[in-house]
Image (tube, rainbow, N blue to C red; front, side, top):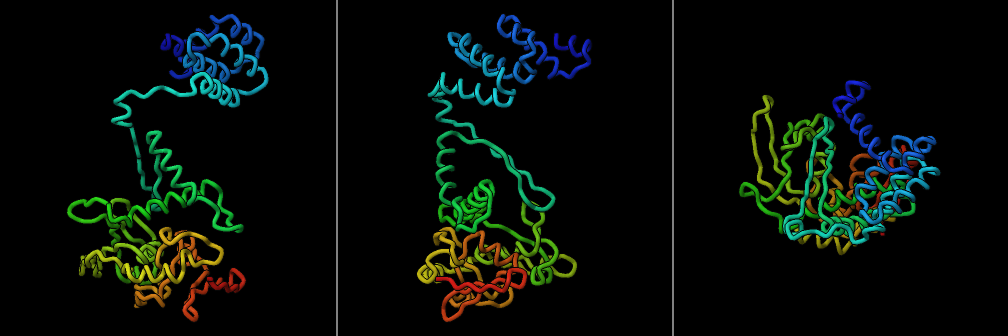
Length: 329
């Protein structure tokens, strides 16, 4: 019948299927009468059809009456919200999971690298893991200060990145191919030092040079120096640039993110080289400062700079930000 409707009415497969389902709905007298009076749009009918299919058999007449009453007041989008709430109230505990669902929860994650190097993802996880994720994101997604203008999705996105960075620093991560997890960036030494061109990120594609330098501040770095013909001249070992004893000293001095007004805790912070290590800056307490990921990006990719003045970090805004100077602590 779907194929016949497609041929007769010149509609798509999904449209023909909807027509057939709506026609079956009209067997219900109240729905037929409401449709005849012009009270039901196609979206209304779709919502009613799906909701009645999910509602328990003994409750369907009452659900139908409620939906028809609300359809006279609200559009299809709002009716969908109402229908969802009705189904929740009818089955507040939800579908009881069977033993297999508990033992083998279905989880999915799809990653896609875009041309600019950013990554899009979608997926789903089980309810228990979702609750844990929400609990992790919530404290990290709070505004850093009264001047934090990020939207809620932006703050949650930054919080998710913070979780990734904290996980990547964990000593419990598994090995792959005999190595601890690391990020391999490949680019010419000249481009890296001059912050131009792009770096090739193993398995993901290009990354701009400025971001590659920022990542090099406090991470495991696989150094691959290329010659003029792009042949590898020197491959360095993966080394941690900030020793534990120096990081502990930074925690004692800075207490967390040193940027004025930020209250991020030490475990949420990176150790930033005031004089960049690629320019010969030493890995020492008087050349390092703790900053959260948001302020780390700010220092690397804006007019903000940081110096160590009398043993304390001091942040300054460049010409485009009014030459303001703020001292931490």
